[in-house]
Image: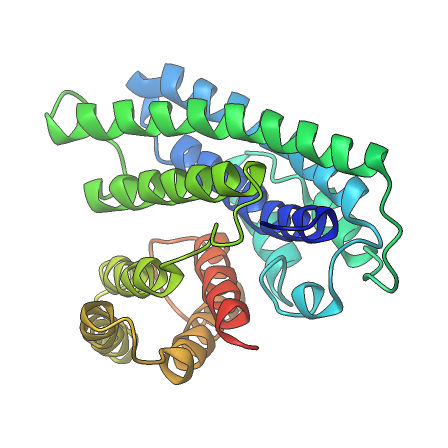
Length: 286
């Protein structure tokens, strides 16, 4: 069973990562809806706003209670995040809440534990709020996936991508449920989950580079095959390959921001995938 100190730290470190991921899923959904699906775009905007509030609350509670390793891992923001957020806001008109990234820069790392029952109660309450919101968001994604799979709607998202972001919401629900039970094994089987995720990132990116970007397409295809193989044997360390795909995603993000790499995906999408790779690296490192 997790101690109170472990419960607080692990909850906040997890929420700093996952709430931002959920918020950006809402942005990606909203930006991919054609005019006849404006009602879905409005629902996605509502979820984005709710997750922005929850991320702000998480940042407020996290100050002085999360490890320096987590803060420096590149899983919460990268050197590209602010610029990527601004680029998406400029191109789509969707607010990306860049002030939250700036707030994250100022989170102080854990030095000594100063845990009170009030702190634990506040984190417990925050986890509960987040869990309710992610459950609702997962149901929204499942409905979106069902409608697109049945050809009742058309969006600018791959059906596989909708399935991917649904699985991520379901994974977050499992993690939060485990944390609320103070289960020390709340993040078990993470390698199996993240190897599959890395493979799916590579395959989606492969199909979103401009056809002229042959080198990037071929490299993405190679990473898809590498992580498909790793997903079959999760006991093999994926750390070297995850560091490699992280660098690949960083190069793609930088290239799109400087208009040197052509693609029909946003730099926020690739930066989002980069942070997920960095999160996996953080989990694998002692």
